[in-house]
Amino acid sequence: MTELFFNFLVPISMVAVVIVLLAGLWNMMRGGSPGRSQTLMRWRVGLQFVAIVIVMTAFYVTSG
Picture 1: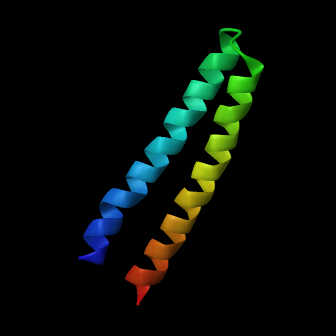
Picture 2 (picture 1 turned 60 degrees about the vertical axis):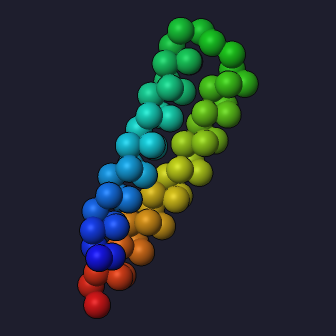
């Protein structure tokens, strides 16, 4: 059951990172607010941390 949980959670976390990254890049390319770009990039870093924690937890749980 935990493998099924991680099979959904890992891709969702990675897709969230990609969506925020693309939103930040889109905002920078169209000349949007620099503050908004900075906020989106900070969110990206936070989401990357969460995604790495989820992936490493999935490795730990499913390897045993």
